[in-house]
Length: 310
Ligand SMILES: [Zn+2]
Ligand SMILES: [Zn+2]
Ligand SMILES: [Zn+2]
Ligand SMILES: [Zn+2]
Ligand SMILES: [Zn+2]
Ligand SMILES: [Zn+2]
Ligand SMILES: [Zn+2]
Ligand SMILES: [Zn+2]
Image (tube, rainbow, N blue to C red):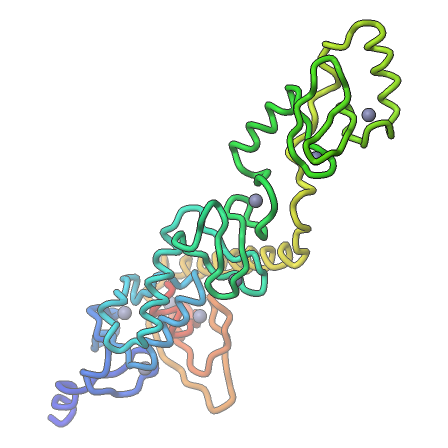
């Protein structure tokens, strides 16, 4: 009788297994077959779960037993800052071609409202990022821009060449190999070197002499010029490589568990270890002080993977 009364006003948090008054938990409508109580999360655990989901996109959106937990259903227990972060995360993941801060130590998402003329300004560190090539903001047109690439292709076939000094496209004057840019630089159309410093001159003079001046000279100029972009960060490859590896690990281990799901109905037994002892979860490899072990197939899952990831 006492236990029944207790359940009328109190319930268990499915994450920390402590007892809480019902007004201080988020109660959901899910549970596993072998459980009696519907899943509920205490204030600390629901905040912990949503924080983990914001940090780790593989956990997004926040779920329990496969069903999404609405941020608004949980908002009365969530830190208001976290509610805003969740709304931002939602927008980030629904934005096509998102731009992240090019400052590698920041890498915050730049919302479209902070993007003007293809340059995004980070609200966190104020760094500016080109939204087309995702590199730090650079001078001039972006070589990754489709329109610019079209122009470059055209320029490669036609009578334009970039000035070696200021990078402006300069038009070739008919019948002459001598390019003069508005910045004052003079250069050779064929090789792009400063005027009179290359060996193309005499060749062209010979052509002029033979009356072939209007012939389209040379082969198309290779464009766009990638060397205008800042050096790529060598750390970037390492980091994206690690992320890929982690993703395939999680995928592979999820498959192992799914293979067991096919043959096992699972009977979860929660094992709490003595202080200081930990065991690794079969999905995320996180060492935890209490694990859910299936007594039939032997698979071990942390509570986050069991409730919120699977
Ligand atoms: Zn809890
Ligand atoms: Zn659940
Ligand atoms: Zn930033
Ligand atoms: Zn760019
Ligand atoms: Zn110039
Ligand atoms: Zn030349
Ligand atoms: Zn099992
Ligand atoms: Zn886990």
